[in-house]
Length: 469
Image (cartoon, rainbow, N blue to C red; front, side, top):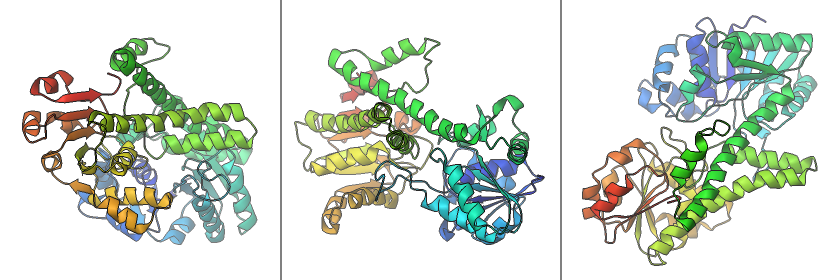
C-alpha cells in the first residue's frame, strides 16, 4: 500500500515525538496526531515552543520544522481516521486499578475504544499499528474487534513497539538501535509490514529494521524493559550490601561493566527506577506468566519490582534514621521530582514514594525541579493517596506540608537535609558553600543519584550519604 496519510491516535510521550520525527523524515507523507484532550492539542499547536506539553531535548526543533508543513495536531479524530491509510495507536495503557488483574494487568480500555472508533469510521482498507506497550496477543484482540465491527473493510494489524528512553527520545528515533515490526506472515500481512518498513527506510538502514511475527514483537517490548529494569534492581540490591561492607558500588559497577559479556549500561545505582514503562511492563509480564500458569517465572520477575520498592523505602528510612530517628517538623529539600533528567515526566518517580514516607513521618518536603510544576507535584501525591483511599481532609493536611519552588536556593534555605532525587546536571553546578551556610547544622545531603562530588561537599562541612557508599 502506498502510504500518503498517517494518523496517530494519542498525542502523549510516544505519539508526539514519534510522529514528529516521521513527519520530519518523510516530507511526502501527511502526518496527523489526534487527541481528545483539547488542552494538549492546543499546547502542541502553540506558537511558543516552550509551551509544548512534553519536554524532550531536540523535540521543539523537530516540531518547528515539520509542523504545518506535513505535521498537524488536531482533535478531529474521525477526519484523520478517514483520510489515513495507516493508523498508529499510541494511547495510554496504564496498570489496572480495578477488577481482575488489579495492580498488574494492563488496562486496555483506551486501546479497545480506538479499535471500535476506527472500525466505525473507516470506509477503506487500513493498516493499524500498535505503538502503545501492550500485552502479548493484543493484536488478536484488536483484529477481532475491527473485523467484527467494520463495514467490510480489511484491517491489517501490525506491532511496532517503541524503545524510547525519555530524555533521549529524539536521538533514539533518529539513530535507533533497531525498529521492530511484527505482523502476520500472510501475503497481506507481509505487504503491510513492507509498507511500514518503507516509512522507516526514509532514514534507517535495513539492518536497523527487524521484522518478526506479531507475537514475538509484542513480547520483545515487555522483555526489553524487564531486562533493563532487572539490571537496575540488581545493582541496587548490591548497593545495600556495599553500604554494609564499606565497598563502593560505583567501583563494583565499573569492575563488572568492563566485562564484555555484561557491559556498563544500566549499572548506575540510584534511589530506584521510575517512568511509565519499567514497572508497568514488568507487572504486565508477571500477570501474563500467572495467567499462563507459570508461577515460578512470575515470582522471578516480580522480585525486580520488590527490590525497586525496597530501594526507595531504604533511602527514605536512611534519611529518617540519620536525622536522629525523626523528621517530624524538619525541612527536607528535594532536588528533582521528574523520574530522570531531561524530561518533565513524573510517572512512578522515586521522589513521589520517598516524599510519601517522609510526609508520613511528619516532615516538611520542599521541592525544586527545573521542569516540573507545582500543580504536577501536588497532583502526583494526591493521585497516590486517593488510590490508597485516604480522606480529602487527610490529603489536604499532608499537602500543606509539601512546598514547591521555582528557585532551588529558596527550597534549600534553612533545610535540615537535601535529597537528590533526579540527576539534573545543574545540581552539580550550585554554590554548595552558600547552601551549607544557609542550612541547619549538621547539614546533611542524601545523594540518591551519586552525582555530587562527595569529597568537595565533605570538605565544605556536609554530612553526605550516597547510594552504595
